Length: 242
Ligand code: PXP
Image (cartoon, rainbow, N blue to C red; front, side, top):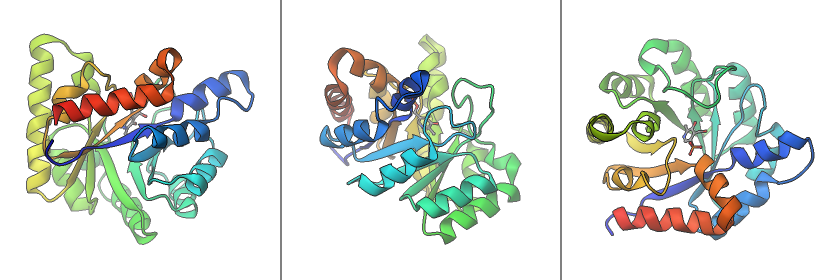
């Protein structure tokens, strides 16, 4: 194994199951602690504007009890910047958000958003929070991240996961090229969205990617093998490819 690839476990969908019944369980904070026991290097949670899964109180509790860094995913709005600054997570990942979407469907248009995004990156950095931008694996987005002062990008792997055959291969090549460019530009490179045991290998093998954020598949697998075992298996699948 060369440089260790970090695993950030996203616990949003534990909260989705809880909220489906409007009760207090299953608790995403309990799941986060189990993920840490199983080898997660960080915990990721997305406070959506409609609070459909993670809630403000979950973020506060995660920050309070986690023994590993908390990565706070959020839309780039003033209201979210205020909440993140008060929560003081290790990191924020800025993502695009549309209320009608099932999940984060595309990357942030860092190139198009310009100064509106830049002022939020600046405010978060001033609060001592490391900022990452969730972007498509496209050169203009990486150049925009540098121009906006974000030190980290997370490459959106959703398209790679959905495609098959040659099209998937072409998307994988785009991700490789983006990861290489990120490194040239001095950006820390993460990746995530849609990753499973079956498709994580080629992404984990990209040496300049230092962190993967994975959630939905792990919560689903937990139904069959338990959360600790699901995270352990993902960790093992990542390590095998490194
Ligand atoms: N990274 C980011 C920026 C995301 O928005 C998400 C989904 O919340 C993930 C990673 C994890 O994706 P998945 O739940 O499909 O593993």
